[in-house]
Image (cartoon, rainbow, N blue to C red; front, side, top):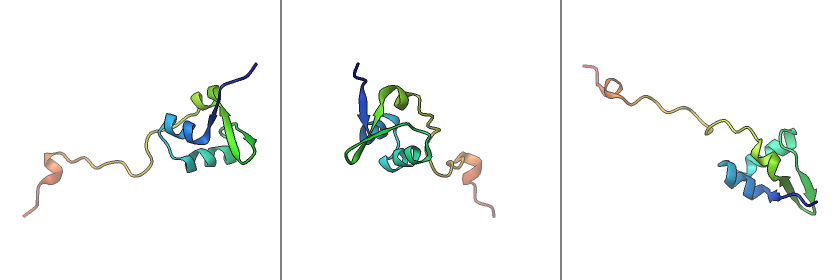
Amino acid sequence: MAENLLSVREVAEKRGVTVWRIHQLIKAGTLQAEKYGNQYLIKTKDADALPIHGKAGRPKKDNGIEANKVKK
């Protein structure tokens, strides 16, 4: 029984992260993948179960009216 396999690029696009991040997760053992030739293939069920927590980087500042006031 053949399972649906996805490339690293397909998983990255599906999960909204970079290809580099998917490679990091594979290397860390967080994401199971099998190497065929020079590329990794990931089972669809493993890609769907991958925990991705929001976007990377610093949270945006609260740009409400109070934050924009200039002190005199």
